[in-house]
Length: 301
Image 1 (tube, rainbow, N blue to C red):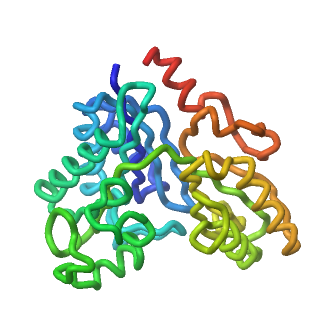
Image 2: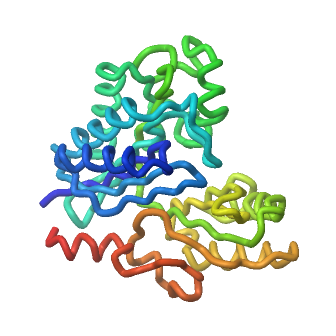
């Protein structure tokens, strides 16, 4: 069976009924949901599903439509940056299951066109699906958040969407739709919330854009009542999970803080644990079911 992975992020992490409705909409349209992670501090949910390419865009659209109907960004607050009720929708190739980046780019373009046309939500294509270089980096697309985008003129070429109207949806904002390689979303906690300045300094030290580790995106936040270094590891061949954790630990200790625990958001490939263990990473609530390869094997995919 040919499969792609899709990992949409929705701007709701506090209302279980809304999260369940979005997840069920995806499943009802043919997506095989492997994991749902709802975070009340980020006020954000991450749904991981797989589907054959011919069903993947349909399942993603169902989730986006449910979020547009149920999430009101004018009443939304959370520590994570966002531009939309359905904030980002990345398609991820699974080469072991016969799909490549070209498949995912095509799916991103098809989904983006449909969301813009049928839901009247502006769509920005990012990463490998981007139609212009300045939109490859998601942070550039999301700069200013929903409020900044709402106040901007989307008729300005610099902010004009790839699909949909040239004004944000009043309650659902906009959505970034993309295609990218597999990544690991990994958060490391370093103690009480008054260590937020330390978390921000550590994030600057480890993120590639600030001269840190290659393939690492990072923010310093307060989540779960603690200071947190929130990371996306977008190239495990250049920076492993073990290397990212050790760099965060060293930077934090140099500033008088220490790592208390860490968490995985969504699933990760098995090779992410090469050279380390969940115990060394201080991963909380980790089980083998959080490994994508094993989940797919259990399903007989």
